[in-house]
Picture 1 (cartoon, rainbow over the protein chains, first blue to last red):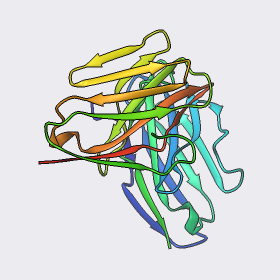
Picture 2 (tube, each protein chain N blue to C red):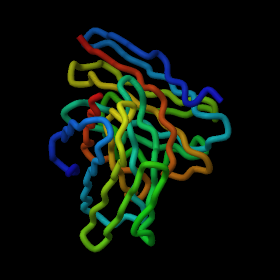
Picture 3 (cartoon, each protein chain N blue to C red):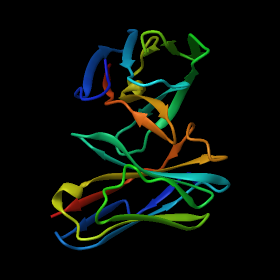
Picture 4 (cartoon, one colour):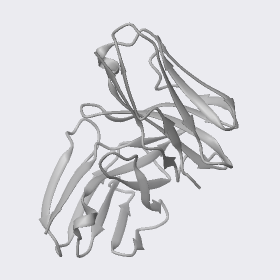
Length: 114
Length: 109
């Protein structure tokens, strides 16, 4: 069991460019969560899928951010027209049975927007 | 203690000492989770305590929960250098887990 896999581990983009972050949940887990972590804001919930369906996206910025889960083996978080304030560590987590507790986190993708 | 708009707390102790980290939460929850995060890694669940439990133990870890005061604590007995990490409490809120601001614990040799 390789755990939750996130790629890339580090991404640097220029202001205005697009960034796509990938997450592969643990096999057999039916829930995927995305979080953003910064020193100032801490760990912020972004969105949550269960059985590939979006359940709660209340933490997603209304503009420029989107998430998809096209199949049970991966999810993507896309940020269009990146801004310096988007710089953060983006964490993906998965859980068995769709439960929101006992989440297993990946190592995160550190996004730096210059 | 951690929560809400509070800044990340920091504690520094010597190896072998006991330490307690506190957490308060604002809304009803059925469970309090405690996670630890090592540098460069994602958080990892270390102990979970439900609203019908007052205390939960796991090895050198002890979590308590007081639903009347909406507070929880995590204690580590005889801390080791490898316990150095950031510790978060988290609660359930409808479809998501809400994390506290965290406590940075440094255990010195």
